[in-house]
Image 1 (cartoon, helix red, strand yellow):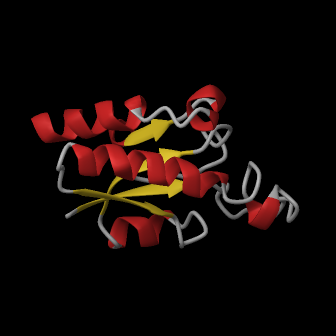
Image 2 (cartoon, helix red, strand yellow):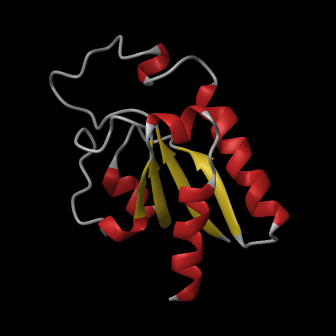
Length: 118
């Protein structure tokens, strides 16, 4: 099973504000779970061999690579706040605020299709 990880917090830095939303997230509590659920439902409906999970590494790119993340989906606003090191930018989805807040699964599903076609 291929793994997609949802990044909802910026990479750890010296000046990262501890009150950056609830638990360091960008949006209200449990908003990430709603988006993850919507995407996983679309994946299951199409019977794809992918699993969409929440980041548990505090945006640690080395750990994400070691855990075998195939795709990274970043919450709005993290495009320049996530340290991607050597992770292929073509395997990342940068959500807009509207896509995230309306549970628009199309950007992630397009990226999955691109990966399946390779």
